[in-house]
Figure 1 (cartoon, one colour):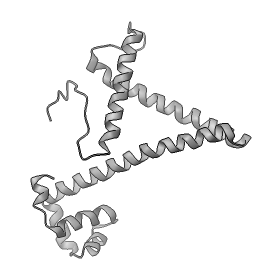
Figure 2 (cartoon, rainbow, N blue to C red; figure 1 turned 180 degrees about the vertical axis):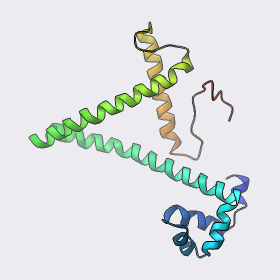
Figure 3 (tube, rainbow, N blue to C red; figure 1 turned 180 degrees about the horizontal axis):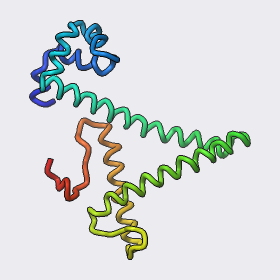
Figure 4 (spheres, rainbow, N blue to C red; figure 1 turned 90 degrees about the horizontal axis):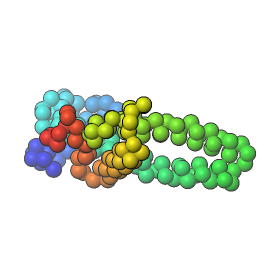
Length: 170
């Protein structure tokens, strides 16, 4: 925990949890048993607001990690429908694979293009990039995506590839 976060009172920690689960400041105030006026005042304080934002980011990252984990079960069920389903289930499963598979490939290609500058290889269409260049970049994208997936499992910050904009200095 950061030093600022440790300076929050137990009531403020409860208020952050309430803000994350309730739809409004008023409902959060009722949930954590403080006045909405007090909660709004705390939200104007930098240390409270920063702790609230960090808690929200961690919660979001955990949710993404859970989605990634659940995706493997969804793919297994999809494969099961392709192999053992009725004709209608098989056709629907195939449609899902083609529709979403294309999107996944496009996302991976977009990530590859964004990361290509990091390795000093021009991999634009029509360039003289070798298959080895593409394999190296593809492996880097895989490693980067795995790092992002693992970041949701811990309180560590996401690893970012070093680029000209982000040369390792935060």
